Length: 349
Ligand SMILES: [Cu+2]
Image (cartoon, rainbow, N blue to C red; front, side, top):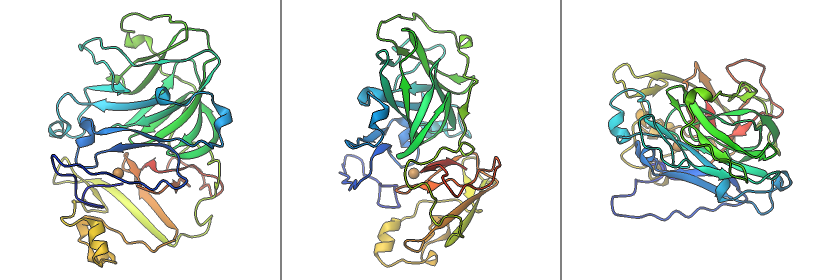
């Protein structure tokens, strides 16, 4: 875990750094990426899966290997940092496992995922995207969620998944439909739609580009972040139960009126510190006042329950490194769930 200027300085050009991670009992679907500026958008990103030989859900699937990891990413044809001269530039194309097409572009080989009839596949879907939310679906197949962001869940079956930047899902898909090609696709808008093939064990090739108009997004139950409640498999109760948290933060998000490329949290724009935050702490910093305002550093008491409220929303994913949280209430309505809310590390704010 190394956000640049927080845990350490970034890796200098022509140098290397070896991360050593103590995994403990951790398992599940994660990803790695550069955390400096827009670097990851240009390719320094990939899936990172920790397999568990004693997975409590092993009986739910037959296949779980390199071929069942599905990465979704957006892709700019000019370096992303240059693209950011406009606000939220629309990506040029989208990729599934690093392959994709764009209108007017070459007919590159789409990613193919071969499945054999009647086997159950654990697909690990990882959004490596820079922007926005995608809807992911496999034509004519349901998706049974068994993991979100490294947290095993009680199985929950949907037709499509809304997946935000940095989110991960494991879904079980049973190849129980007639032998054929099925489209695996994700999309965020009609302008930005892509199609991939999922092939049956007997190859019935679908030649050429499938016209976009022929692809109908699933109208069945599509999971929506925050409003769907599927329970964690173990320890479903949120920290602190229904009691008050030890510390509560209210975060508001606003665009910076002085810059089209900046946003503010509680009225302040984050700026990377010149001395890494962790180094400052190791050197004795221990309260909020030890950090400049634009560091956005909040010192928390150890072993305490923290409540974070997003006021007004940012329409943007919010994530924590190294911690999961319970999503007890959504702005979309409904009472708080203090019994078995979803637990994950990325949520829509
Ligand atoms: Cu991060």
